[in-house]
Length: 471
Image (cartoon, rainbow, N blue to C red; front, side, top):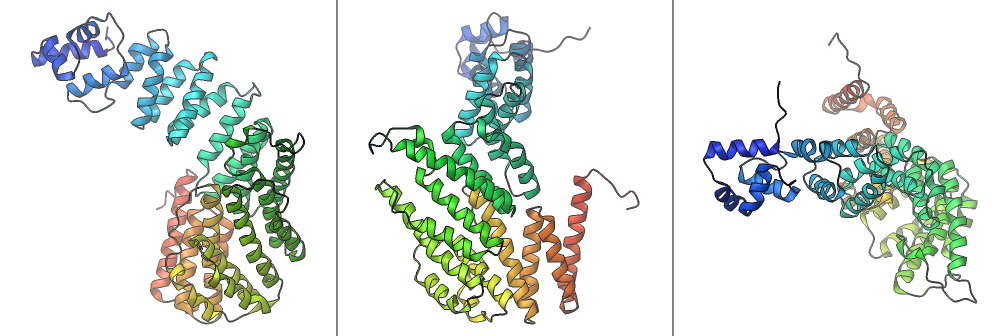
């Protein structure tokens, strides 16, 4: 009969092989003789810290005995969170996700562990160890899926936040799965959840969903704002401190989102009405510096977007005003620059305007158009889509004006971006534009195009689990 090895027997064999006494090994490992003796004799379970010291002293890689640790001290013994908790944290440090899954799989039959694992997941999430936290959130959510608890809703919110990335198809799935849980969150947490959902739907140009999320967010934020300032105008201390933005921002941002919805639908008059709404913030009661910062941002956005709406509606006379506004603006981010250029290019292509001189002002921004660093749900989702869109509009402009080198350069950038974003619709739009002007492409450009198409094809073959057995 074959015996399952244990850490104790592995250590005992090592000591005999190396001819080391308990005292000598203890000196190497930084442990006293009694602790080493207790481990070898099996009289006392070891801690994860002791295991790491032993592993290092034996010259083995970090985590070498972790599977045996699960067998010896988690499966074979009564699960003990005082031992399991530091083990999970250590696994997270070493990015041992499969080991975390195994531990959780062993103990999650007992609902009593769910609360503690949730707390660990929240701590790991706060530390930025999102992948490790995701394993715990998913398991807690699975165990509590019939509990209809706020904790389940928070798990789903965290899962959504972690899973959203540069794959727009996956993002749509994540948003769709999370959305039914929003109402189960704490009323304050619902505001950030709706904001994040709106931004994901905005990046996907799902304007009906953006409108729905924005209106829900506005209604809930207005209620919370009224509650915060009730009792004869005295501000109440509330849990709004945990919001990522001042409370009034959620009301005004909802107006901004609704303006964007109407702009996308071509209803520029209605878009302007919402723009005027988030420009007028005289009703805001707070006067602190953070509040003033956000008020300044909304007024900045309102001034720009009011001009943009007029421009996109066909009022070409405001183009010079928009350029002057851009030139005068201070502390303009790279994202702002690209969005400003995108607005100009959409109008130029729609109304056949020569904006070659204006484009020259953005040359530095065009060169670095792909160098953006996402920091929140907006910059992770909306900005990359705008960058890819801007590339497409530039390509459209140049190709229709016979500037083929510039046109194909921007078109290839846009195609690669939309492939990365897994946005099939806009990728196909790029293909159509390329094929329409293919006679003007150089052999090298055609080869790059075909190579990209083949790469996309092969990626889809792998993703769908199918193989062309003839190749």
